Image (cartoon, rainbow, N blue to C red; front, side, top):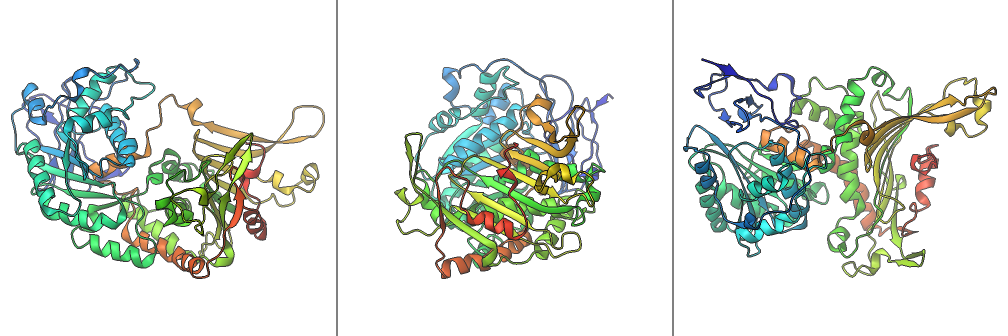
Length: 592
């Protein structure tokens, strides 16, 4: 009896060490494994070869690993019959599939399917996973929203945002055709158990008697999270597989509202069913942080107050709210960017070495960092709001010129803050955050400025500007991903002239493959039950505990944000804040 193994999805989570297990399949398709009795199995047979693989995940789920081939031809136009109705049963019938209750299927429901996030990010990410053979053989995608729409109209809407990898274009339109035939739509209210019950019947029809695993992605405003979770949990949960819910930020406005939301969600879901998504944790360079630090001997010994002078986390957008200020005005830049994206990156950067790469071990260390941090004080925060500015014959509007924003709004569109971690590794090291809209460029980066060399023999070559003699590690998260280390170097020649140079890892030059979107990685992790890049409830509590007092003080005292011109580098106050801690913002350096 021949048995064989297979290759798999190139982006499948494989970092849990012993968490994954491979199993052999015989030619008669019988499965031999020592797995928990409750394990759910995705069985995949690739039509391109005869190899199969099963992978056991932490929660007892076994997911298929799929053969992947390189493809490189231009994208073709979608066929006219793209929008024709085909059920997964019909697809299975064409492939000779006979329903089997021992097999598994994954049903993904995008709640809020008619919104921008679903159209621009979620559906394209799901297609990318399908294109890379990262979804199980049996899967169904349902869009759910209040808008009236047919299956064909959903497919037409989704098809406009789908793209193939730049380096892989073979059979692109064929793949899109196959993917869209797995997409369906159900119209319903978010607070209607009856509507979700109707969805449940449709899902069961597509699941065809297999073990049903269900993933709900809540791409809806936070004020209706609880009702949607209640109705989906009570009326559309899986009866014989797992049910998971992805929740988009914001997770409340402060500690109190976040706790209320968490308590409400946990009335219907267990903590391990809730996947709080922060898409910045799925970005390639953020994921690479722990690899850079723990897999390279040269960095870990330097990763402390002894050698690091300051750490900067910088986020900037070169556009304003542009008519979408209604949502933003209720939250502001601190809640929108700092309390989640930047703070999560800081926790990953500063954490101690985890016991293992298991999700809980990593999240335990992140929580320790957050609990060691001082709550923010008002004097360590600078807020700003962009004003109208003319440049090059073009007049750019102020924040309050946005018709969706109140004219007297004090909501900050820019903030800078100095944070401190009171533990042995980081005591006294300022962690400076800066985030803003309508700035001079778009980007996100981590900048690590090292201390000056004691008794530096070459100080006189740098004059009084000792910052130019400082080594700096820069991790550019976006755009144009890169890691570079600034070092001091002798300029070739007979004299002794020093120059500051970059040791540069430029991703586009080094790697030919297109970097997957963050949502692809996070959706795949949610399907596989990998929680490493999702936020746990105690992490959320610790994060809000840092920011809630200063947010309350800003609002109670009605602090007026400092104005800065649209397209500038932000308010002057941010430079004074940095100078107070003997720091100069690294993104002001002309050597970029």
